[in-house]
Length: 145
Picture: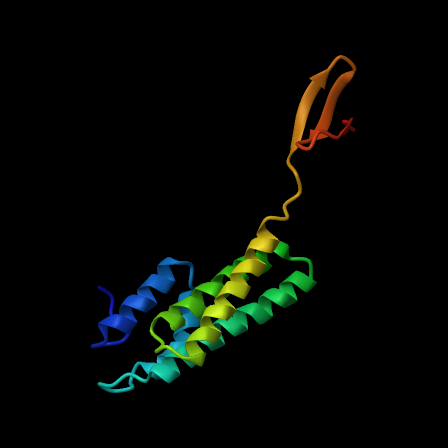
């Protein structure tokens, strides 16, 4: 297995899982590199703060992309934010920090789903007696230009 955190199987496993779930190595490395040399006793508070900071950063970028009209890019960032929050939440002891991470993950995921599911209906080409027509999957049609 790849050990991002030398000697720490649990954190390295969580790191690898986040990568597999869509995390980006450069983002994760920027926030987690300071935690690599924490010594034999890892700091769960620093772990939680790093992952939550990653998630919050992605949510801020997503909101900006959404405001600029990049709906699908925003959706991908919201999903990544949810992944980051959940990854940190899994290794956090029960308490307010764990609840905050979980709630932030749910909110980011909901925003991602809300953006991703607002696709325009597909257009279908149908041949009719008067010529080809384009119609939306919802049934509305218009003459093909």
